[in-house]
Length: 348
Image (cartoon, rainbow, N blue to C red):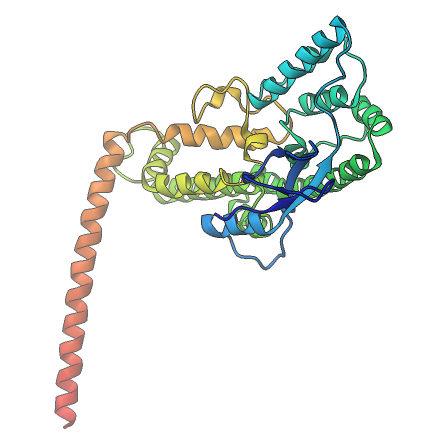
């Protein structure tokens, strides 16, 4: 993936060694530069491949400037202590250990207000702030920051507000998939979720909803198809779930791998209590959007379980049936070809 060259809007210097996302400080004037991307796409865009998504993210990247100093001017012991608290809060952000209380008791300076804002919205920088779906205008920290910061920074945060509004609208549109699933309209839910994934390929929630819609559709299909199968030693639902999980795990792991490329993946799925990749205990606790994430992670966690003997036998017999059907079809095709050739010779 190619890197995007960024110029400092304050002094015009080229900022070298930029990563694909995050924040960078100009080595010449100290200005903080934050990268964001515009995740809106046209309705006719097809579901993207990982390579296409990388290209799309790079092409649509924007940059903007936050003129906020990282330290208070040191002149006494209290200020030195304050600077240490600020440093601790910045390090906590990098670890996603969000704790606004670390800044309690500090004066309302731009640097302190900025850090409080990021901690309260559970994001590590303005880049991620622009990707989440909670309005920041009502925050007291934000209101105070807007009064104290310079005009350039104020304009930048207005851009972030606009990006957040786009995210809210997109999330509301994507979440309509849940209503279809709750009504057991599995075919319609899958069609709608597929359209949402085409429209919002860089939104993690679009991938989550497609994952769940596809899974529910298959589970319903298998339940109806295999109800009378003689290898169902347990309930219909359990067998259908195991069969679906065994036969389609590669497909769903691929969907998850694509989702992980979304810029807002960490925002949608992260929890400080996460202890392993598909930890189902920490999802669904923070915000209305995470119920679907929780369901997805239950499914992903199930892929770690091996299939039962009944499912393995069904799969084995199914392969035998497929081979037998293929041999029969080949034999019939050969017979029809011979018959056609005979008729052709008879005409001559």
